[in-house]
Each structure stands twice: as C-alpha cells, then as structure tokens.
Amino acid sequence: MAERRRSTVRDLRRDNRSVLLWSLFFSQPCSRQDLSEATGLSSASVSNVIRELISEGIVTEAGSVDSDGGRPRVLLRMNPAYGYVIGVDVGETRVRVEMFDLTMTACARADYPLDPREHGVDVVAERISAGLGSVLADSGADPSDVLGAGVGVPGVVEHGAEVLVHGQTYGWDAIPLERLLRPSTGFPLYIDNGAKTMGQAELWFGAGRGAGHAVVCLVGSGVGASVITGGSPGLGGTSISAEWGHTTIVAGGRPCRCGSRGCLEAYVGAEAILERYGLPLPGDDEESSLAALVDAAATAPRAAEILDETALYLGIGIANLVNLFSPGRIILGGWAGLMLGERLMPAIREATRRHSLAHHFAETSIELGQLGPDAVALGAATLPIERFLNGTAVMRNPSLRADGRAMLARGSPGTPVQLSRSRSASGPARRRRPAGTARARCPTPCRAAG
Ligand SMILES: [Zn+2]
Image (cartoon, rainbow, N blue to C red; front, side, top):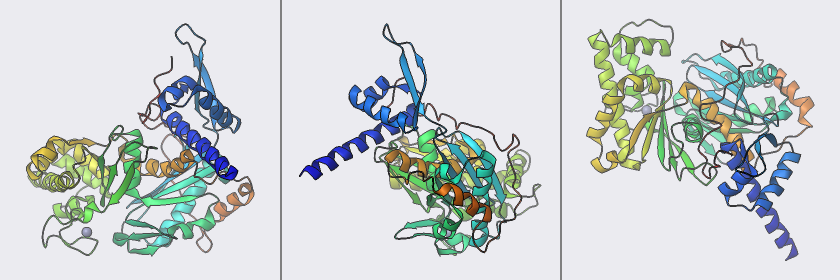
C-alpha cells in the first residue's frame, strides 16, 4: 500500500515535470507565474519542479521583466547547453544531418549527396554515420551531450521488437536501420517516416501550429503525407505517415517506382514531372531542372501545359485527402511542393475544389509549409526532444563520453567513411532558429511575461 502511494506520488511528480517542460519549451522565455497560469499547477508545485530542473541544469534563468506594481518576474528558458539533438533527413538526392541545441537553434549541419539511382542501405548508413561524426566535430559537442538523434526515412517504418524500414521505392525490404547504425553512435536513435517528421516540424513550429487536425503533404522526388489528429504537441496528439504518393489516381496509368501503375507519385513527384515533360532542361539535378521548368512555363507552352496538368493531379490527390479525412488544414511542403505551390496554388486549390465534397472543402484551408525545404531534418530532431519532454528519453550517460567519439570517428564496422562534406555558406557553426520556435503556440500558452 505504502509502495503504491510512493509510486503514485512519483508518477504525479513526473507528470508535473513533463507538463512544465512542454509548456516552457513552447513559451520560453516565461515566468513561473506564467507557467502556473498556463498549466493549472499551483505556484508551489511549479516552484518545486523548476527548482529541480534548474539544479539539474535543464532550465536556466534568463533575466527578468517588470510586473504591474509587484516584484520583477524572473524569466525562465530551457538551458541550450544542457544537451543537443540531431535530425537526419534521408532524402532522394542527399543525406542531411543537422544538430540543434535544446532551444532548437541549429549548431551544425552536414550534407552528403546521394545518387538517385543508388540508395543501397550500406551507402545511406555510411553517410548517416559520417554526418553524425561531422556535426559532433563541427559543434565541439561530445556524444554524451547528445540526447538522441531522429532519422527521417522514406517508406513504412515498423516499430516492433526491432525497428524495420520497408522502403519499397529504395529497394529496402525490412531493413534494421537502427541496428545497422547503433555500432557507430553513442546515443539513442529514433527512426520514423520522413513525411511524418516533416509534419511534426510544421505542427510544432510552422504552418500546423494550433491545428487540431491537419495533413502535411511532402512532395519531393517522392511523395508522402503525415496525418495529424488530436493536434497539440504534448497533449496526446498523434500523427501517422500515409503512403499518399502510392494511391492510384489513373487506372492503368504511368508506371510507378513502387511497381504499380497510376500512382500520384508517378504524376506529381519531381522525377515524374521532369519525365512527363521529356525535353532537355538546364540544371544538373532535379531541383535546378524543376526550377528551370517552372521558369520556362512563362514562355514555353509545353512547360505551362505540364505544370497545369501537375496542378490538376495534385489537386485530385489533395481532394482525396479532403474527402477521406476532412482535416481542416492541408499543408503543402517538401522542396518540390513548395516550388510548385508558390506558382500553382490557385490552380491546385481550384482542382481540389472541383474534386472534393463541397462541405469538406469549405472547412479546409490549403497552405504552404512555413519551414522551407529542410523541415524533415528539423522534424526528425523533434523525435528525441519529444522523449526528453515526456521524461521517457534515455538520459545522458557520461560513460559514453570516451568511447562514443571513438566509435563515430571509426564509422560503422566494415563501412569505412571517407566522404567530403558540404557546408552551408555561412559555415558549420551557423546558428539559426526555426521561424517561430521561441514563440510557437503552446497547447497551454504562457502569456508574454510582464
Ligand atoms: Zn507507387
């Protein structure tokens, strides 16, 4: 009986701690009083938990603001130096690895090109390992300072006794990616579908903020979607990845990389758009070629025709989402989705309207993603953050400090890493806060202090 009472008290403390961490993460900087008002916890409970979090180095005081006639209020924020998280985007044409501090400010980034015809798991695992080593070296962080790394991959991710990736368009059949990467890392790895991680980034920091239900569409060379229900981060909202790109929109249509025919991806994926155009374009990769096609549409009738068709197919695909989920908000992202949406959004909306039920369409907004084309890596980095805020993360282990760096320097056994890395123009130590991070809408928002 006494043991049960003790565990109940422990559970309550853990829950309070998690509620406060979620609230502070999205509202920082804010005061203890703001946190109390936002979470409904008593001032005493807030003070106790915050004292604990400050003593552990997770939360830090950040100046003060005047309050109406009373004592100045001390502001609190997450301690950026407490630990780091890493996000990995396994895309069609590159592996991007980006490191963030606890306030989601970017600290280091490494990009490795991938040949779109060569997505062997050994090659991808090598580049991920090299990228993890690179961002640690560039940031000066130790593996024991890393709370975890999230990895956004294409395809279906099966979370069973072992995490398995079924990436049919990459030729990946039940790939144990976490097991393959584990020998070269000294921190927890969380693997999930890339469209889902991008959706989580938009939900937390971008166009999905405040949405109860939303579908985030990822259009790059491939096509996927993330379906978000019960919205608010930290309050039990869930998101699932949907293989939207492989839903059929033309019976017996163009062959798709998945082996089927007539899939949405075979019409609106960047690779498919360029194939449908079929004429030479400047640019030595898909991004520059698609940009050239969009530019050419102003003067070249064939290019304009292909883009008009693309808007129609994309609108039909989105209308299917509207009719299936009535999601309230649809967010178009991914590098090709953003490029197409900026030019074609009115035509995409009109095609969606014509192919969806009037009531559902009237209740759905269709918007562009706000986080740019790099949101998959940012979203992947929210996977370890989510565990940390929930209190379910594996905590930092100083014993990893010595051997973790050595393992990363070696790379995976049997897969020596000798790759050049490209860096952003502003250098490896570029610091960037994702738009809206510090002021992201919180499910239980703190009001601006003061
Ligand atoms: Zn397909």
